[in-house]
Length: 93
Image 1 (cartoon, rainbow, N blue to C red):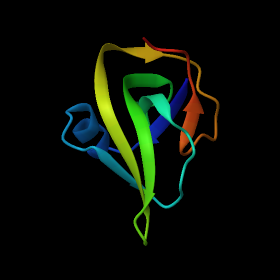
Image 2: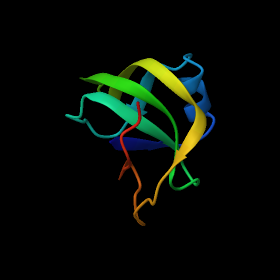
Image 3: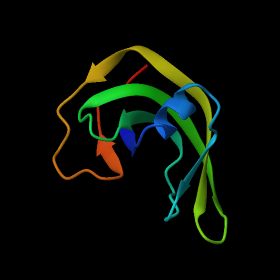
Image 4: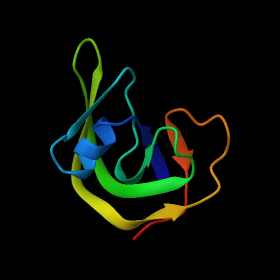
């Protein structure tokens, strides 16, 4: 599963369902359910969300999120060093 690395407090806002757009400097073609990892806490998937669209906002890109699921326990995995935006983790139901 692809996992997006996000800084706090933005990750908590996504997990709470109050943030449905993630602003990024680049577009993405990735769609579907992705994992969410807190920046600085390597190898812990804290939740999942569906990345369903990406829109050009002129100065940045809006990654559209929906159907967030906070995991009751973080899923641990061995994250490769050097990951900045995406990491590859295990599949999470």
